[in-house]
Image 1: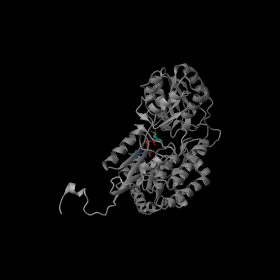
Image 2: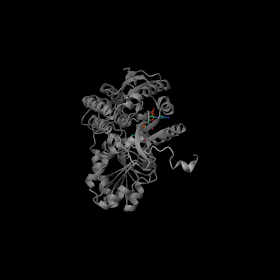
Image 3: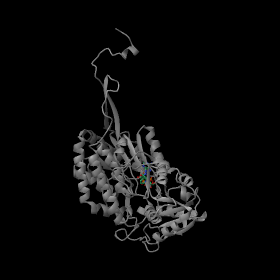
Image 4: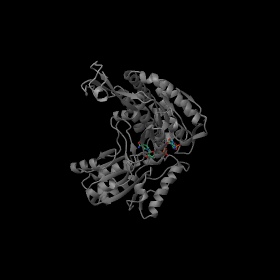
Length: 494
Ligand code: NDP
């Protein structure tokens, strides 16, 4: 079915770039096809966003908030359609789409509808004695946002909502593999009363649409979520024009289990944390470090739980784990597992393409690995698949050191009944989020973002406003004196 894959100035339209085929990863079937975006479409979208900026930025926070509340209401009304589209396009089980992606997005929209009225700064005061200083928080202009394929709807929401709540306008380039829910999200915005041009979607490849968007002089800031490698290139391009950049990059979350942990809770948490979205989650539990007395029992329990995970059609509510995003990505994951095996690691479970799922789909078995070396690829590099590596440790010092021993720092968890151990882990693990006795939950009120090579800047929460606003200091003389004492420092003319 040919469809219009662009959304510019409040209307769907066709792109001017190369044809794109949108595939259902679980079956290999085509969902839709259409023309992708290129530099000409970037021009049109940025121009629509610039035209919309003045009016949107000038609206009162209350007016923006009302419209965004209506946006959240429409998303709630369309939740079933959104979940079905997200599940098919991203290969994720309908249960995950219906109970995580869509409600999370609705909650985020409602949160930013409220937060739009709470942009904060310092209280005004007379710091010099002769002036009143006050702070204005002002929107930047057009935000160029680039998103990955793993949580297409939530990523669109995380990028668009804080930006528009603060009065900016946005041109979002989703991954060209998964544009369908972003297009529905933008349509709902316009139906709710968001003026045309405030939210624009460009479906295109990184080369044809992403790069020109980052380079465009009309784009004030680039907000990027994706891999560390591409993020580095995006930041380098933006640096040339001294553009503000927000980078949410890869992760390699450690999952630290101390010997006083609740083993059943930790094993269940590890399976859920490693297999959510088939492991294609930047905060997924990927490296479990387990204190030696619990090691064998932990591995056995995780293996037992992984055996019970049901792979199947993504539209079946009984399916636990869906497909990976593409067969090319599945082959990359399988290659990493194979190299781990060749270098002496033990594949305790999985590591193969399952035999009962569609051949044209991109399924991969839940995989459990032990015996890998800390410095090996499988422990150091992002896999982005349903793979958990478990390694033993002896002392608490060693656990913290191993947890910090990758270039990434997005998320981590620590499992213990001891308050001093969990306090130490939360203080010393260098990551943007540390969970204690859990792994994965997120809330709209709290920020998400990385340390180290996982990037900088925050998505979600009121902290996101720091990315999407300029802070202006206004200093007003309150003396009405023409000859000010401080002038004498510079000149003494009568
Ligand atoms: P990529 O880095 O490959 O791509 C991300 C986006 O950038 C895509 O839309 C891509 O388009 C685009 N892009 C590629 N090249 C350029 C370019 N030169 N200029 C501008 N844009 C470009 O990541 P994936 O899509 O493979 O997503 C997986 C990655 O995302 C993982 O590393 C994961 O950790 C990370 N991620 C991080 C999150 C976080 O919050 N920290 C959350 C979710 C994912 P195209 O599709 O054409 O390549």
